[in-house]
Length: 611
Image 1: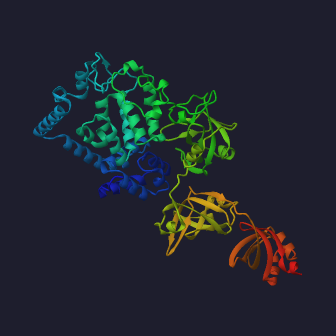
Image 2: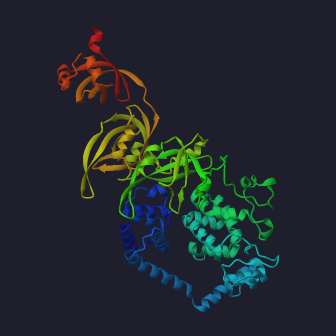
Image 3: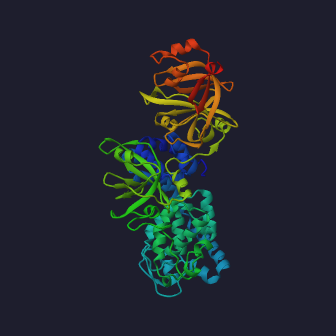
């Protein structure tokens, strides 16, 4: 994690920039800030996100990153440009000052470099490197190359004396690889970046420290050449390890092109891959190219795997992706360019090769797509931000596919990334609005109620439901808001549950948990049917359909729900409009009951039994 070295002026302007963004643009900004873990930036406000950028980026990195992202969103209007301009100009000035060293100092550096390389590699190598040549000229002189003076124009070897780092005949555009390599390095935090540098072979101390991340792509391509740098980065990413889809997605197009190049064109040295990768090569022959596998498991004819979709820029309309819907989000609003309100939702889908998050537009698909069912998706739209299912896409049900358990778990975290698991006591000790996961036994469930809340100077009505859980460290109360109340349906007292992505709420000395849009309830163990004797001591609410009552149970007072018809039949009361008055007159009432959670499913009057 980067040190908090941003100056106050940039931090203030950075916050002002976030305030210029619409909600959709703000979500895109969070998406492109790839150095910040998803679990940390999810549901963060603009103030909180500004602080996260301070925590994870150095000043020059954050200025460059924000400028690049604003252009990509795009949000490159005069207001944003004016907020960025003084910081960008200051950054350019600092770079120019660093580059304009006195001639004498540069001479001393060249002499030290010459002496060091002469000691390491012999006088010939030092003599060659000591000449003042641009990169393209230097590589031509070293390897006997004939090419354009433009250092990015690919050149063709004319002798077998090519250095390991020289470029070869290749389909890999150097400019594209440099950009991809820049994006890869931006994904690495300081610890992983330093680990990568140590694992890359043959780099001098000067090369390892020159210009930090910004100049490192150029340095690696100069040193290894395009093809060998692709190979080295691929191996090192496996060793760090960074085998996640973000890194592998950036690498995959270049590795794929590399696998198609005949080995006789590769004059440079290649590092052996680890034994696991070699095992996929025919006869484990290190002299033969071993293309990276693009699929695991069998894919039906005419279909494309999820793994290939993640690494593709375009999918033919005749190809379909099939998978199991592991998770579905709620409907989320957005505005079109014409300021029309519409909705979209996310689904997490997995097959035998990988998992992916799809962004699906419209209520029609929301009604038809269900979790744990299998579907095919055709005519997908792929861009830098998402894989989208629109009104022109085709979605159809299909038969079951084999999906590994680990990929189902991976897909289950795509829409709602999980926070750390805390005990109840640990959750209570966290700061206000800390996102946590907890496990415990449900001890009480209140009914759903309608409340009025203040939201951005507007009063709106929403649903609210409280329930309580308890673990070995103590009890805690949970408040579910809005659509979150639907997650409590089917929940009963005695259930053991896991509650994910809830936020702590401090009110004086009391700490409770609030639901978020990412909250999920996972039932670990259902409560069984219990036979007990209760004493009914109060009526909370009574309708012809059901009655909510308070009863003493195991020396504690609990809330139970019982069908009103069962209650009236047990105590021989007429089920009329205000039948609770009759119940109150007869109290206290004792009954032998069968309880499942907080619901009474069978009831017998104790007085009748004793008679």
